[in-house]
Length: 479
Image (cartoon, rainbow, N blue to C red; front, side):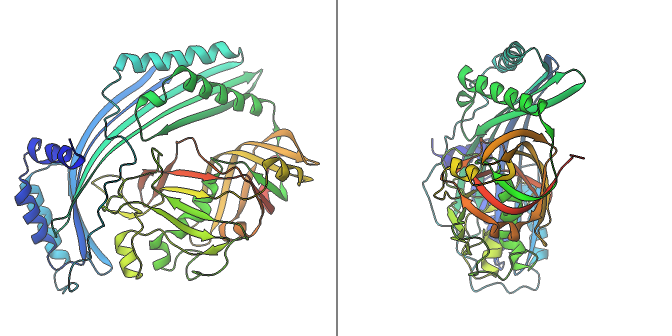
């Protein structure tokens, strides 16, 4: 059965909507608007959490609803409901008519998204094949394996999360686009102790596929081993020094700094409004030579990937920075139209209850030419940040603060002792110019990213190679 046929079954055959009348309602509601769509969604999700040697929580949820949007110039109206009925659609249509009152509209509504038959992931629902009892046993096995690995383990936590989302987008011109989206994730964290001191480590993995990719013993045992390794490294760490120093960032997940400090500033809405630190710099050098950054929503099975975005636009690989020069922004349909550009497949929303906005998918810095060993060897004294925890950024100024969850001193070109409490403090645009060496080992994170913006959370991916940054401010805890 085709993706469109599956969603027709969910929204029309089972929910009771009449497709022909629904299309007519959408066409009438959006007549005279510059753009807009009806977004239909059906989603199933489950989560199991294991803690303190037992199943702590288990939940399953089914949600469905619609969101109707009309765009007029820089203004949009949005109405949503969790009931898929013709009466609810009619009430939403009244709101849309109020939004476009007095608006003459374009000569024609913005052209629809181009069609695509590309599928980046399986349409199958990952929640149904694996019995609940098997999921609980998986978490229990993780707990038992971890505790047998090292007597210093004080606590084991594990979580299994799965989702299946079916969407159909209907435009006023009758264009219909559908997508079926699986998403799974397995997280493991451990706490180890030595006397009064306790430290933690964690590791997670996931993507747009079924549970079978993450539940093999070889897979989850490797996750436990990595979480334990991180915890033991932190258990033996010493306070981090503070000051301005050379910082080497590891590959993969440290790309979260790139995502926050730079990626958000390259989303179309912030640049159209002039509130980004990168606004007005198109075509100018904003990074060191060799720095190339892309946002690629078309990587198969990746957490941040989408066959089509939440406006129906096929995702693509959008080059944002090329050899240090700003060459592109991530665009949804509205901001692209207002900026005289084309949408890039970055219009995303958390659910039917949220309107689409420009968001990242998988944001990656391309590889350079140096080996990681060359980069470490080039540093006489500095910090090697391998993993990151929390952080924050101010989009307007570009200032960021990030905490390293695993870091080491670099002493005379060698990785030295582990340190704890290191924070990286800087400015996104400035940090791009401080990159002096780019590794040849760019890789993606293991598939755990969640991005927040305007109260909406969406799954994302990040990636980068090993990087050397000169003169970055490090906040530490050493006295």
